[in-house]
Each structure stands twice: as structure tokens, then as C-alpha cells.
Image (cartoon, rainbow, N blue to C red; front, side, top):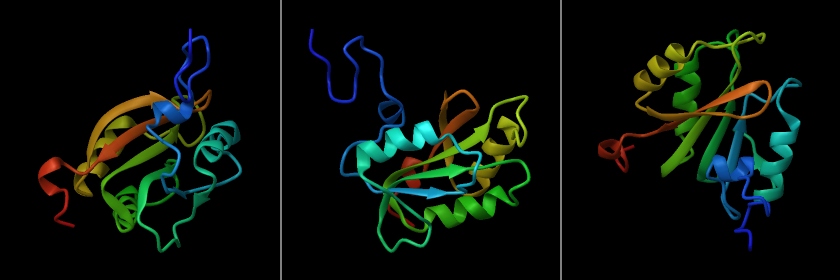
Length: 145
């Protein structure tokens, strides 16, 4: 049995696969702090080489946004994330899981995404302490930014 790229021989998908991150993609990270999941970051860095910060001049394929309840206005931050995002790019909002300090209600993410012009497509477990919501621009709005 052969494993596909990014998969272990037992068929378990790596976090980079679950996030849809492929080698050669430009991934921007926002909201980094000492509470982020370093194991997840390491896997993603292994896949793409490095994560760029929000000061990048590059067009990015993926935005990883670490977000906690007391981080401010999520709508404003999502709008900022859209600036360098490619037309078919994805924003992943990573939030502490329920019961953890800084937990964000899923409805807050959905409402903020809609206000920022994004749609939530899925949610995954991003590690022991973090959940991730996948946000994209609606198909009708792509290319109009």
C-alpha cells in the first residue's frame, strides 16, 4: 500500500491536508501569540517552508487567523485578511475550543464572516485546544474585490 503525499502509511491525513495546504502555497499568519498550537504550525511550515505575516506584499493563498474572544473586532480583522488574499483563497479562523480561555461562539464567527463578505464552509478540529472555521468569498463575489 502506498501513501499519497501528506498521508501516513496508515491513511491518516496530516493537518496540512485537512487545511488544504499544499507545497508552494503562500500562507499568511495573523494573531500569533504564545498560546498557539506550535505542533500545527510546525506541520504547516514543513509543508510550505515559512508562514508570512500580515505585513507581506505577496498575494496569499491561505490566511491562518488565531482568534480569541478578547482580541477585538473580528469583522475588522477579517476585512484586513482579505486584502492580500487571492480570489480563490481561504481564511481559516482558529479559535480555542469550548471550555478553553478565549473561546469564541461559533455564531460570532458566522456573523462576523457574513459581515466581512465571507461564507463559512466547514469547521474542523485543529488540535487538542483549537477549532478552525473555513471561510471563503462567495463564488459570485470572487474576482470583484
